[in-house]
Length: 338
Image (tube, rainbow, N blue to C red; front, side, top):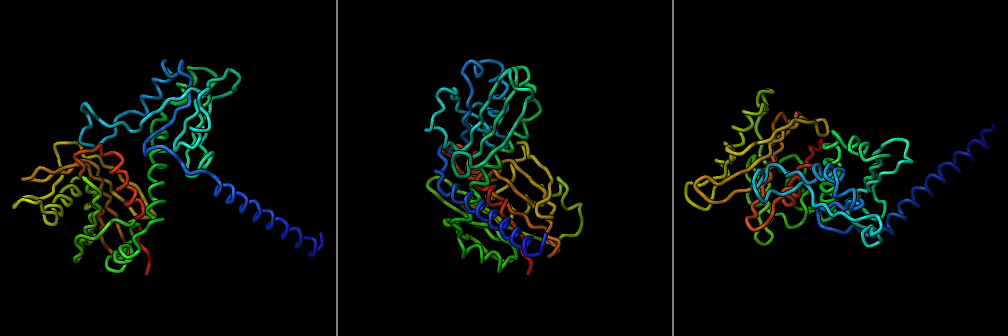
C-alpha cells in the first residue's frame, strides 16, 4: 500500500470515528431525562414470578434494610431501594424513562443464564440491568451471591447522578476557597455554605427546610498506619467532634453513637488509602442525632490524614436519600497537585 493511500485510509478511519462519536453524543442529547424518585427501582417481571420464590429472592436482595440509619434493625427501617413491579405487558413508554430498570426474563430457549448492564438506554443517566435464565431455578442460582453486585451497581448509579448535579451546579467560590486554603477539592453545589473555616478545620452546611446536611473537613499530621486502625479512628473522630462541634445547649457536643454499630471498610481512591466509618451520631447533653459517613484519606503529598465527615439531621423525614447526597460529596474528594 502506498503512503498516499495509507494516509487517506487513516483519515477515513479517523473521520468515521469522529462521526460515530458525534452521532452517539447527538443521540444522547435527544434522550429524555430520567424519571422517578431517588432510590426507586422498576422491576419488569410477570406477576406470577414476582409472587413466587423468584420474586422473593430478588426482593430479599433489593429491599433488605439500609444499614447505619436510625431505624435500622427496627420497625420502619428503610429499604435499600423502593421496588416497583410492572408486568412486561404493562411496561410501556411511560415507564421506559425510569431511572433504574431491571428486566427479569425466564425463557427455556435461553442457552445459559446471564446478567448484563446497560446505561443511557431509553433516557439520560439511566441504568438498565437485564437478568435472564432458562428456568426459575436457574434464575435464583443466577442472582445467588450477587447481592453486592446488584446493590452496588444501583447504589453507585444513584450517587453518580448526584455527583453529576453537584458538578453541574458547582459553588465555584466555595470549591476554590477549599482548594486555596486547605489544598483539596470537594465538588460542593450551590446552596452549601461555609459555617466555620479556621486553621485545619472547615464546617460546610446546607439547610433546606427542616433538614440539615453538613460536612466537616479536618486534618492532622500522618505518622504511621496505626493511626488508621479502626479503634484509633473512632477515638480520633470523637475527639474532633467534641472539640469542634458544639450543640445549642451549654456543655453539649456532637459525638459518635457507639451503642449502635459503626461499620467500617478500607479502600483506595485515586491512589489514596481511605478508611470509611459509617453509623450514627448524637448530641451529648442534647436531643439531636442522625446518620453519618466519614472518609479519612492519607494525603501523602502533604503528610497528613484528611477526614471528611458528612452528617444528616432530618427528624421529620427518612434519611437514606439525604445521607447518599452527602456521600456523593465524599466521592468527589481529590488532592490536586500544585
